Length: 212
Image 1 (cartoon, rainbow, N blue to C red):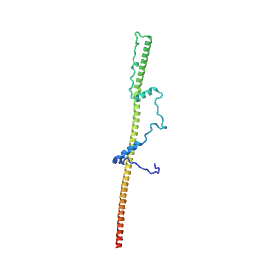
Image 2: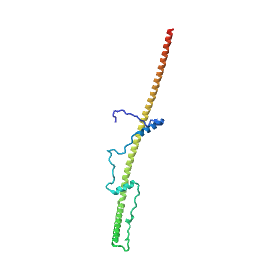
Image 3: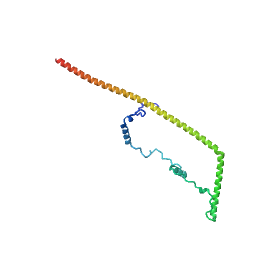
Image 4: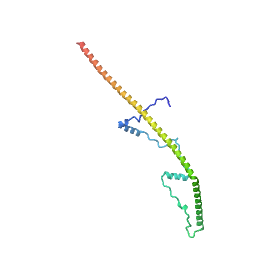
């Protein structure tokens, strides 16, 4: 979009090589960067506060903290899957009731597992294929967008480089022309000084001849 303003290029990083030619400039740049104020540690007031995930679910929150701290996954409690008998001999009624309740819970758990396996055998393959198809489509779309962004980035950098090379050559040509003009002006000034000295010498010679 043309805003009517003249573009000013005060830096041509693809063309300028002053830092390589003059190492002391790099030291000056580093010193200048060292004097720059450090970035504030606090966020801007308009930045929203961080989102606290799973604030209403302490189990998921604790699991997220475990993963973030790289702690190993706790071992599974296998005691709940066993059928322990009463510890005393003979066992009390309460112990046998607890063992019987545990056996009922284990039996119901196995029934639910059988139902889940039956549902998985019936519908799991198709659901898995559909999920894989959706994931593949999403991956292809993401890869396509990524390639487009890479091509756009390369094109922008190529255009910047070509523009800076063109402007750099123009600046070099203008600098060379400026140097030539300055040299011509100095030669003209030196010639003028020499002519003034010659005119003064001729004037003195004329005055001497007039006296004779």
